[in-house]
Figure (cartoon, rainbow, N blue to C red):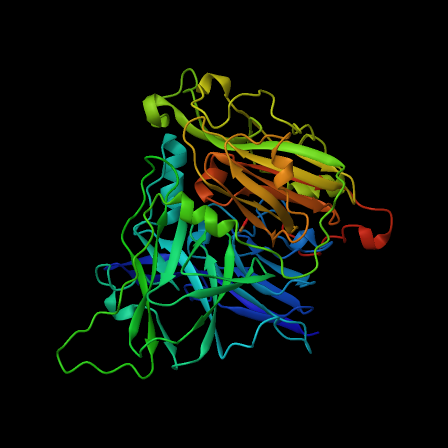
Length: 546
Ligand code: C2O
């Protein structure tokens, strides 16, 4: 196994998109940031130097961080932010994961531009469970704002209203030639006729689930969230923010130029989104050159409608683990968490300019009626490790305090979340099941729920209210997919299981960033086991303090 050393300098860099240039926070001046390539079993040592004017942290999305929670990265959860002028070195080992993960800032909305791919090749001396592709290409889907994304979310937090939607979706940082001022820089992926390319598709977007398709070509899905899956073919994939999907694509069509295209999957009724199609180009090297002055447009694939939940859910429920699974058959912790949005009444005495949500309210979001609040003086992991009182409580409810028809038309008077920093304590080794139940208090939406520090098995998903009498019969205990981010279907539920074998404090949240801002998060406190190999390591000496 190798050790890979990298330097990440966080800095403001002028970036031009959509006819304008704006100062953009980047890593090493690159947008998207550098792709890191390792083998399963290797160690990464990344020194992050903050030369920007904002606090920053970097999260290694999906990396299990066994006993190294100090390197996980979410601000105020596992570390205090790296202040302007400061630095911190993340050190961790990839253990057992192969495929595609990614890294991103985990501080305010900086991840809009601070992100990149983390490619994990098979352990040295081993190979893929599918024929080795001729090429491999990371495909990072993202979102671009003309304004500074930090200002966009600060403004929304002030007013209580929904933040402005992005001005474009992007593929490898580019909106593509259907957007104004963008045709020069469209991403082009070259292929030779007959060859197979492994596309490592990552949804790095902030707030939008995305469909992805290539004209006239089919995908063979072989992995997701750095776990191999039983191969299946599809012409379209859907990713929620945070998710990755590895697909093989064979150049078996007449040599030409084909669009790779991205469009929103907007499950929320009435939520604004950008319906422009984002494009990149798959270009066969033998594609005929157009005669001088003639423009031949690439072939554009038909994309699903923005509200095509059937296509989205058929896709997300097609995954099956390719490797032997160790899904717990017995459970010690049977949890039921609601996930959804809501509206808070304007607090008495608040100015009307701070309550510009629907009908003078403020948007909110919660799990089991608790809207998660980040601490500001300590990280939760530090408070836990040093026994600092008063930073959090451990009374996060195991089940919702009020039961009702979660997916019907429910009155919001049933559900006025409390704001608090509540953790749920798990014994080392506990076998945990969580029913994630979507609600429709204010609006129903598909929520990509991400758990740090763990991969979990998705046993089943469905629509309506989860029914413990009948829905348990649908559980797949044979070959359920292992993921770090579950798409909880709109007006529906997902059931996940994992073994709490990684001590630390681990946030679980909706990966639509605006929903975390509104409180759609909670955190687990996983206790140490008995032996040293079952305990959290000591913090690095350069761990930032608040
Ligand atoms: Cu990809 Cu908490 O994040």
